[in-house]
Structure formats: structure tokens, C-alpha cells
Length: 541
Image (cartoon, rainbow, N blue to C red; front, side):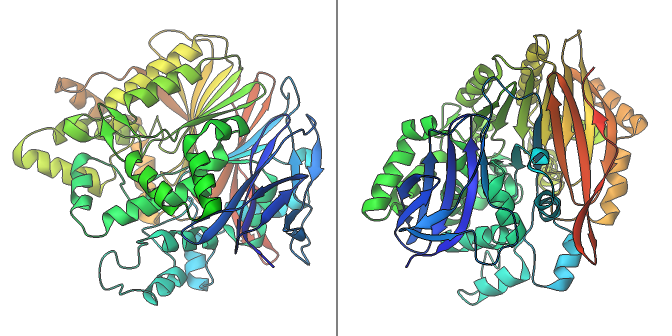
């Protein structure tokens, strides 16, 4: 009898449909809430994305998972509430709650390692959610990168890899292939609390660098260095193949899945045999640059009544060849700009990397981008600094950053109440409000929450605080503009909350045109994980 290996994960939910993702240990028919789908195979592993239609708007439905008619979810003995699909009401919802955060290492069986990483904010949230009324449950969860750490494996995964190959050779205990990536997802998503949370809260995802490797696509120099190794091609291909399976397809609506040529080809090949070849070719094309464009688009959009979520790929879509630097290619930016317009009251832009950063860090990144273009030793030194200090956020792609700023300003001049850029990556939590060179109607914010489950070394915390200080940042700005090589920024911003440190999860509660941000820090007691609330942050006028 087939068994459930991972999942169920509740992914796309709208007013009348939902998708549920699973991994099984063999080929079978997967049934969820009256809908079913056969599994497809990739490299000997079996997956299904069940599309459920005909649901009633604004309702909640408990569900089970059956494999070939046998119930396998919920797990026997689970004391958690039933997994549930809650559809959106027609015409929007005056009370919408969205969670977000990034950077989540797995829970470790090694006590010392687990203490160093702290309490998992998602596990703490699941504990509270399991004993809360359904009306208090979040409507959506957005994971903004570093769902797995391919370059910083746990002790358990490092030992597992060491049993299968010689870790004295590169890439050591970093993951190297498809099976090792699968191990990361199993390790990260199999714990009881997080598995239940994923089965009940519709989840959107996007990758960041550690899903592949630290500094992924920082620059063409970085890519050239990686491509000279013997192991990089297989590593990047495995990263994109597993990302497509475990994260990307769940971001798509049923209509988008029906139109997606790659999804159709994988399902067809994977039901008849094995789709590894199809996905391998797809991953190879996805990394190629042609005339300032990439071979695939990972960015996507979701609508929740009066709220639009527009998630931007800030990693794989970068254009780096021939000295041209762009956060995403021309075609993808055109798609982003087209989908930023519409009939909504709140625009949420999901970007794993912050648009607005601590002022000092932002100015340094813009300066460094110019310095890296210089010939000879000075340019090489600047490139070394760029990679060593992770200077590869939006401010280090100034052309793209300015284009994003112009788009946000244009939206803010319309009828929206708020425009919020949701981000992670930088291992602290803060909120900043933006202003422009002319008045706008909407309030515009950078909202950053990281990490969910990781740590920032204590010696780095003062550096983040100093980077927000106005005086050193102002000196940097004057020096930057005096050089004449860096344009004045088309946006100003002021920090309104933070920086906060420690594992945390953020949420946005939206009621009509009102919006409020909540930050909750994960703590541990003898009774288990719990959340400690920080001061709430009103975002509306």
C-alpha cells in the first residue's frame, strides 16, 4: 500500500478552488476533498498536485488525504485540529490576515545546534493556532526565501551526505544533487507542527540565495567562478528542478496550471515513466540569458479580494552577462509592471530582498556597484568586497531599483490605500515608510521579517543598528553624490519600527482600507514554543 512521504501542503486557494500538494512513496491515485489526481514521477520519486474545484465561496471544509482509497492523513494519534480548506468570499474580505517571513533552518535533533538556531517561529505560531478559534487563523502565508539551506546543512544532513559520498571533495557537506535536495525538504517540512500548519494555511513561496547557494547570482564574476567548478552545473539544475516541484507549481492557480506547458509535459511524462529529463532540460533553459531576458518566469501574482500579492523573483531572473546588471530581465519587469495595475486597495509586493534597507547599507551597495565597474585592481577589490559583504540587494542593482521605485510611486498616486514591499533575508525585523519627490495618495512601506528560524551573530546586531543612524548614512550619501557616478535616490524613507532581533514572524491584518503590521518573536518555555508580541504598527492614515 502506498504511503504519504511529505505533505499535504495547501497551496493556492481562491473563492471556489484549491490545490493540495503531496509526495508519496510510490505511484498511486491521490484523493482530497472529492477530487483526485494520479502521481507523476521525477527521478524515482512520486508527487501529485490535486486540483479541487466547485467549492463554495467563504466556506471551510475539513479534508483527508487518501492514497488508492486508503486514508493516510490525518496521521494516527494526531491531537491537532483537522486540516481545512477555507475559501475566499466573493467580493473580497473586510478582514484579511497574512503571515510572512523568511530564512528557516530545520529543527535539529542535535540539542546544541537547536539552541543556537533558537525557537522556530512557524512551530510557535502553529501551537497557538491549534488552540485558537478558526476566525483567528491566518488566511495566507508567504515564505520569502531560504526555505532550505543547501549550503549550510545541519549536522544530521551532513552526516547523511557523508555516508553517500566523499565530503572531503567539493562541495563537501553542501548538497550536490537531486536526492540531497529532497533530503533538505523532508528535513524542513516533516515536523508535526509545521506539517499541520502547511496543510491548513494556503502558502505562497519564492526562493532566495540559500535555496541554491549563498550569493547566488551576485554578479557575472560570481557565476564565472561557480561554472569553473566540477559540481556547480548539477547543483544548480537540482536546485531548480526541486524548486519547481516543491515550491513553484503550488504558487500557480488551476487556470495557470492548465496553461503551463512545462507542467503539462512533466505530468504526462511522469505518469507514463519519469519526467527527470523534461525538468532537467527546463532547468537548463531557465538559467540562460537571451537579449536581456531569461528562459522562464518564476514571479507570480495572487489576488485576495481587495488585496493583490505580486511576488518577484530577485535571484534566478537576474541579468548579468555583458556587463549589464538587472534584478530581473526586461520581459519579466514588463510582466511585473502590467500586473501591478488593477482594481484593489492594497498592493503587497513580495521580494525576498528588501527594496529599502538601512541607509548606510543602501548607500554602500550603490557605491560598490559603481566601483565594481572600474578596471584593474580597484574593480577586483570592489568585487571581492561585494561578495564578502553580500552587497547584492536592490540598491546594488540601481537601474532596477529605480525602475521598481517609479512603478511603486505610480501605483501610490492612484486609488490604493497602501503599497507594502514584504521582504526577508537580512536577519532582523523592521518597518520603514517611503516618501517621494512629489505627493502620493497611498502610504508606502518596506516591511521586513527575518529570520523565522536561524540566528544572527550578536556581534552583527550593533552594525545593523549603526547602519540606521542618520549621521553616518548622511556622510556616506554626500560622499556618494559628490563623486558624480551615482544618481540621487528617487525615494526617501524613515524607519518607523525596529530593528528587532531574534526569530520572528510578521503579519498584516487588513480591514477595508485599514492595515496594521504585527511582529511576534518566538520564545521557548518548559511547556513548548510560544510567541511574544512586539508593539503593533498602524500602516494606514
